[in-house]
Length: 85
Image 1: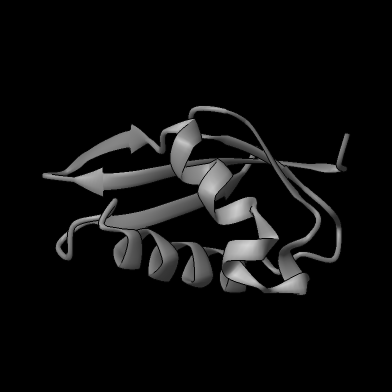
Image 2: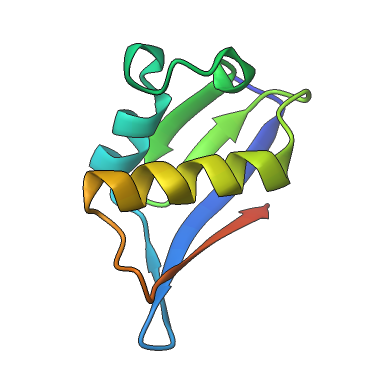
C-alpha cells in the first residue's frame, strides 16, 4: 500500500528479534500516540511495516522505541532497529 517497506526488529542479548505485530499495531493507532506525523504507517506482519515517503525513519525509530518502552514491551537494555528493505 505504501511506497516504503521497513523491517522493525529489536536487539536483545545481541540477537535481532522481529517486533510482534501487536507492538506495531499499538504504535500505529493514532488515538494512542496522537502523532499525525506517523499516520502513513501500516503494520503488515511481525517485524514488517509499510510507510509513506514523508515519514522520517530516524524520528519513527525514536518515537517507536519510546512508545514500546512506555508500554513495557521493550526492556531498557534493548535497542530498536529499523531498516528499509
